Amino acid sequence: MSKRLIRLGSEKIHAALNGLLTHEINAVLQNGNTYFGKLVSFTSDYLILNDKRSHPHHLALADLYEIIYDATQQRRIK
Image 1 (tube, rainbow, N blue to C red):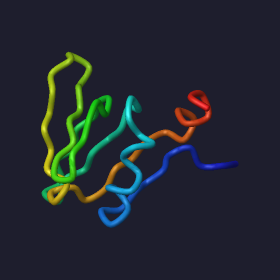
Image 2 (image 1 turned 60 degrees about the vertical axis):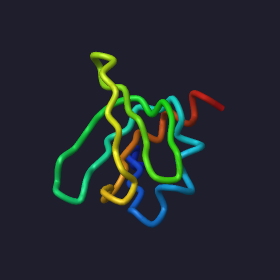
Image 3 (image 1 turned 135 degrees about the horizontal axis):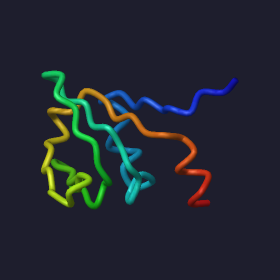
Image 4 (image 1 turned 180 degrees about the horizontal axis):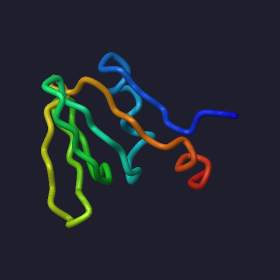
C-alpha cells in the first residue's frame, strides 16, 4: 500500500512551493502549531495560506518545521 501523505522538511520547503500553489497543505511551525489551508502565494520569506473560512495566514518560512500534503492532489492537477 502506498503512502498518500508527503512530508517536506524545512530544508526542502522553498524548492517545492511553486509546485504546491493552489494545493491544500498542513504547515507545521517550529513551535508545533499547525495551519491547514490552500497555498495561495509565497515570497522568499513568507507563504500565505487561506483557511476554510478564506482567512489568510501569513507564515514565515523560517518558522516552518515541515509541510504535509496529500500526494493525490498532484495527480489530479497533472
